Image 1: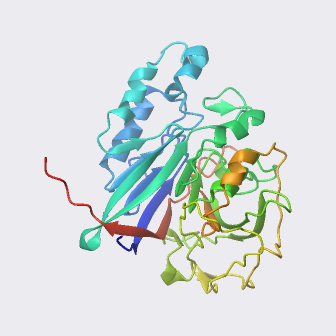
Image 2: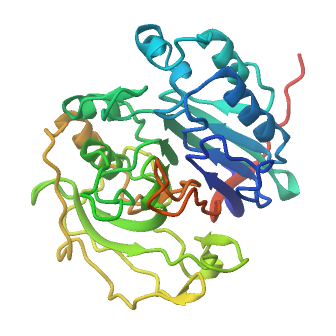
Image 3: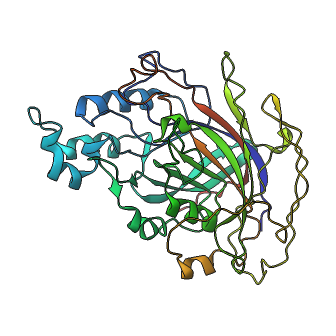
Length: 373
């Protein structure tokens, strides 16, 4: 069996562009391997809005482009638009099928609607990097918007995230992480946070809460006998591109000293989580700012416990632990481009963030030769 090698992959993450684009001058798109858009491509999902968005995404030079809708992209939720479309487009009704076809027919965009796919990227020296992505447009119901669900249904929805997902893209953030607007309570989904504890992907990319833009590295505590959904620690990212012309770079490579403790393990083996120590790589710097020096942690002495008022999903939680001890940390990223919220008046008009650029080492294997016949 071939031994995988690590290769640096650069992801450029955006969300909540709301019709802003490179053409409007709202933001610049750094170069990278993968472009991820976590929803709210438009304001009200009209064909003209979505066509302009698809146009700039298709022209962007990336090996892969992964796109999910958001609650404002109302025509892409066909059931919602059939029932409520007249409340938005009474004088100029839109065709949801035509709008959706913009994405389904695109030769360069991978459009996901609460589904998973494998992404294959060519790497140097005949290698290929493959990772599994799950992406969903849903967010907790608030007002009359698309792709919404009551909080009571959250567990059923997010239980569908596959346990072997490497990257999870959701429009909503999880509860307590990158989900706080100024002066308001955290607005993320508790059931999604529970699902991330269970799956423990390398990256969880979201948007929706504009003021929550940023990133946090979460170390999970997967033990269940002391209470589920525990976290051992959280490290907040300091944006090296804030207030200057530098990129908003989040460097998670081994070279940076901030590599995630997450090997993407999926094998079912007998390896109990109880009393297993978690080794911690010394933290050197985080972006251009010194990171706090943290001691080595053990699952026996967690320093943080967060729990949500959501019913547990026992069968899935049981599946989450055996053979997956290498999945210890997740970096949660809110990549909202729109920095202000409607009606934008109190913040001095519309303001925009930079895309968040993520460098991460992912395993690569030799490309398989094509079989003849």
